[in-house]
Image 1: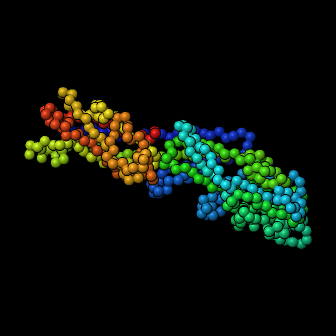
Image 2: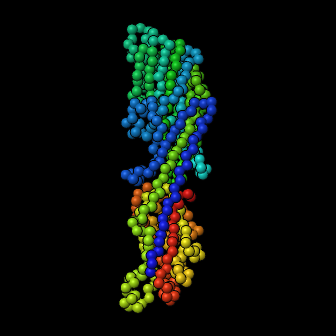
Length: 415
């Protein structure tokens, strides 16, 4: 018998488009990337690629330990009236309330329109207080700079955050300013009471610290997903600094960009695209015993690397119903070849079942979706080729010497 040739091809596409930010608002891009790492096949998560600034740039180990990221925003605020000493209403002083609860954001694939959900929450914030007078002048007397900052607010100095906010250990100060950062485990008003009259005060930036929950990238298509979330800014809004400290922007829009760069690669060993179908005991056994073989078959190993969903199907040189055939050149007599696939551990069908000798058909039925549970890196699988007993008898009775044909096995990530 002459060999049956098998061609293997993999189809992967990546679509990248830009996201246009919303107009007339403070905007900030939040980007993340999934690219499988062969050294960490079980870490199937997005990597936050947003440039870090502010608190996490200064305290990277603290942020890594808590899964927190930060960006310094060009969001400032100024008093519209003096902050009165011993004010009873927190809104008349220096206070913060930020969206510390998880909020969902829909992100849409720019090519296919597929929708996934990202979640984001504020986990901290920080700024720098700037005073119009020296802090020593504000509190009076012969206090040191540190002593004056400590005396200015209730609950010791500003670094000691009131509940529900939490202390972070950051305090940088001089005679007219105080930089700080507070963590936010839960949502609520965090404010301090001024013990002395503050004629004017401002914040010259806002450190925005956040956490992300991203979708499972193994169930997403290659390409870019984009979406936006807008926070209102100002008194009584999502980002609230009270009624005296008025920010310079009324909205903050986060533009999310999630890039998915999947791997789908199939490798056959050298010569593996030429498959010779033989009896169970080989041709010599038939020649010696005279017993006709019950089937002709060959199992062809391959290695697959996959982080994405994919489907499989056949293309045929010679067609036999929903499968391929091999034929004898002289007479044109053809017999069908059954082709099936066994995939390695970690790859399952749409129902989550292992893939063992799953039949491959021209219309792709039964192999419409295979998906990884983790990144499968160069794991072995098998293509099974077989001519059934009834067809083998036809071949032997025909007196033909060779049957050949081309079969293309397709791994396609375009689901």
